[in-house]
Length: 286
Image: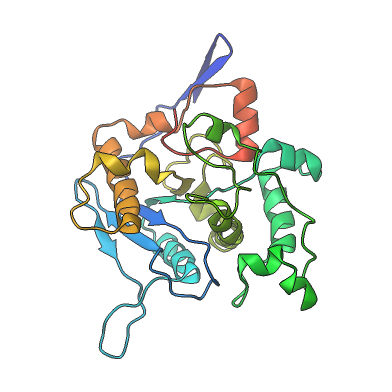
């Protein structure tokens, strides 16, 4: 890897960094509604192979007449885990925040993303089978012996650097508004920790494990479908289907154009890169 710094901006390149051996591009439109085992129409998965058009992936669960059920959050995590165990090198774009603003880290004395994950799941155990995000927010879980509400919170005005670089991304703390990602973020982060714990070295969580993914590893990255959704004709898909489709299509398209690697190296200063190394970054924001 070689790094060149000009006017405080660090550009990262690598002769060994190749996206061309991804076998699968997964676009995942997420939802923080209900519980991790609830079947939600808002959870959508599309998958594209190199040179192909994304196709809808259905839940492995089937009804008595053979029709697929909607996905659950637990099933989506299992899908990624199984793909990694099978040795399929994939790039997965998931539509929720992977971390919180730097102010949150300072407020609660957290020094790294792994430390943030450990701390978060203690206060927001939203991967529990019967746990709603609102159970934590409203103190219902505390009444059952769980964590007290309000111990790990933020303000809707707090934005990560990557959110400030977009025109419309909302704070990960901005609940109960149209287009909010707060609930899906608070529901999804514990599953990132589970994947990290169970998949081990097979998965690269970008950019926390490094801005340049290691050769041969599958990559899990945060995405913001609003950036991509209007590039592709909707063709009868629902809004959630279109978001998942557009993410998978964009990743496959950028790789086919030999442009995907550039999005893993946004033009950040050294200080911004350190900040984003804890806050996370949205793949596609440049």
